[in-house]
Image (tube, rainbow, N blue to C red; front, side, top):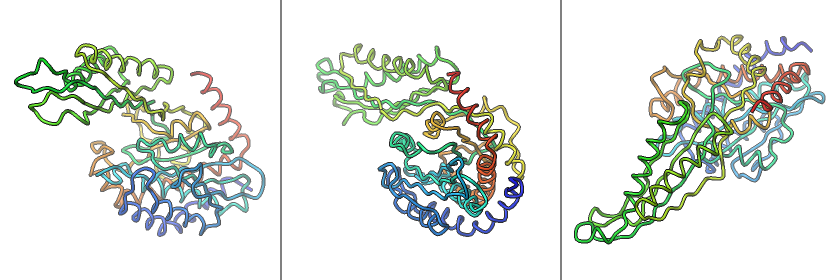
Length: 396
């Protein structure tokens, strides 16, 4: 068994899968489903896996639209998970490219499965719903769905080719200010303005940003601000995201954001209710050893890593980062759009539904399949990746 010979066969295998993968990507794109509602997408993806001999567990981890497909190799060895996401954004559809992420994932897993008679270990296709704020991977981790996995990979569309991009830890805060209604013109002094309290909290957070590290992000929206201009608002609500790359700083940052809200309530005589979402997104734990393997395979498929300082690349938050604290992870990027196009925009959605997205399915499936073969056929490489994971974990 020669790993390079096996890897050399991957492009042809992926090429044979592409018509079906493109069809599924188009179906998912044309039928966007929000988190935990991805019934059609999960159905198409699991049907594809079963057609290729995977044993598929639908409803993995107790989540109706999650799945776990497995195909065993010819001997004992590591279990490598290729992760798929397939939830859409409200009003924007697949403006984060999850239709591409999903099909790259099943394509990579299916390509490795074609060689399962010559490779030890287990290839796993893990379907993870509700990444867009729903924390599907967190629930799957807590349910034990990843307990027998040794490493995992997922690739996201973007403007660069990267094996690693920082991901910020994130806490989601829902805040409700309760005041007292009154006529805004004839009796304003008899009311307590909940909206003023929320606006003050918003301004407090704006001022707090001046004394925070440059990579910290706090941002929010007002979701409720009163019923009529001539009534002092008795209730005002908002949603805020608190983000940082430093795992240990996230609790303190959250405390300071809450203090901004509590101080605003006190200043206006209002009451405040702050609800902290229990699904906390962690910062991403990098694994340089596994990233190096993936970068070699990106070069092999003609998509070399971009010459860019990843520390200066904008970062969001993902529940894939939570998985990086459970097992070694590659959470990379592949270039689909120019630098001026951001995710969560109509322009990004158009690329995900067109030829740029289809190009990524081929490249991403090949690179992830080759990296899985590296780990499944070489105990030394798998051991090195595991050792790196343990060392990076201890640094935090």
